[in-house]
Image (cartoon, rainbow, N blue to C red; front, side, top):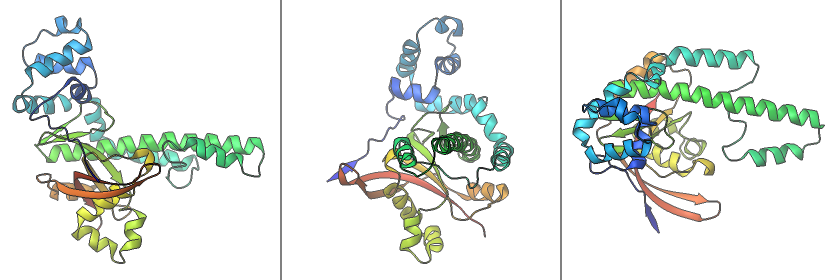
Length: 288
């Protein structure tokens, strides 16, 4: 059986839930209303629900797009993105100084219980196990921080390049951009998956020539705890140690005009194999 993903298109309609995802809080929503000559002081006394509902009532995508882009340029998220390259270098340097080894997840999202159970089965003393949990927690938190900085940096580059993008004003789980009105979640991958490399001997060349196949594998072999079939903007590293200049060059060459149509099978732990249809953009980062 095929499962068609529910795609949100704010060109046609919008609701309070999507408004909240775009703005993040009442303050940002009131800033938006001020562009339409609303009294900010008066609306600050109203509830968040009333403010969001007013935006739903007056919503016009063509009128809203440029105003939202202007608001985004004044957000901490955008300003962090402008400094992202430097911030990432600082975080990686701190990681190395702490002696945390390779930058890799200590456990999958939603799998902390399994991680602890595995530690408890080890033949070591309690203090050693406690220290491993502490180190894993520090790694997990710091990787989340590195990823946030990296994602903001990449998102800023993509935003600057593409006029058809509306970003969410603050971090919103599940939605980073609206591209031509369609919601997209940005995902950054360090490779096209180990399965992709296993299945194709000349995987790098195939990835560059068939990016839709990379997107299919990223959906198909995603972690169960992070599963989603919503539209995504994938940014995928094919090589390590890619310079910021090269990243900028590749993003500048990319096009976000026509999304790829993706069909993939996913083997759920409890639900078995299901087939999903969705759409995606993909930007591949690689050295010459």
